[in-house]
Length: 263
Image 1 (spheres, rainbow, N blue to C red):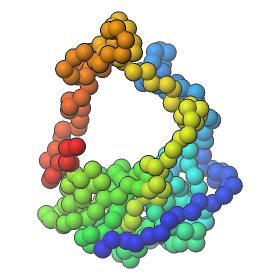
Image 2 (tube, helix red, strand yellow; image 1 turned 120 degrees about the vertical axis):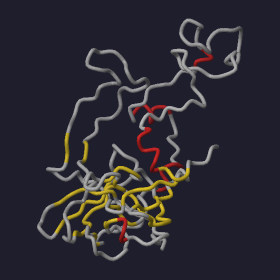
Image 3 (cartoon, rainbow, N blue to C red; image 1 turned 180 degrees about the horizontal axis):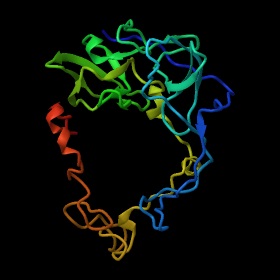
């Protein structure tokens, strides 16, 4: 059963909840020795990190959404939930959630938007997000704006999930997942408008290799505007850049039922 939802609206002019925020220094893409290990990172507006409860471990305790906030550190909106005990926590806001909605984490809870329960209790065809890979570890999959997975089968102690990439993956039925899709699905259509907005996001300019000198990039050199001059693209360090497998965690290959479609 697919959960129908309407657009989520955020709370205007609300400061982050005290006690649920952290501050840290930016690295500028540099390691402890001062050398750049991740290119095109630097500058940007100052941000406060909101501590998000991806596990939602308050079992059988109903919580009420009292605010839906923008988070500069992620693409999705956050929902501030106040539980019956008075404790407040940030969770990923489901698409269509509104202030005043009630959410609960339980093994026997209705299949309604925002509720969190084990995969074995979720029927086929339901959209889920913030999915655990290891029981009790907290949600790891389908956490960005608009992300969702579809429950398509239950078999042999595993739940088959169809991811947004079209990959079908087996996940233990003991893992928890939240019902619905993640909020702010229109994020991918954002037009940043100007270069300064990208700099404010902490992203430095990216120079194409074809306009560099041969000593700076394998694609560089040539008179006037030239192509890369080789059959296959390379990284600045001469390694293959396209069509090369980069996935290192091959131990979980046995849980992949169907690979994603190739573009």
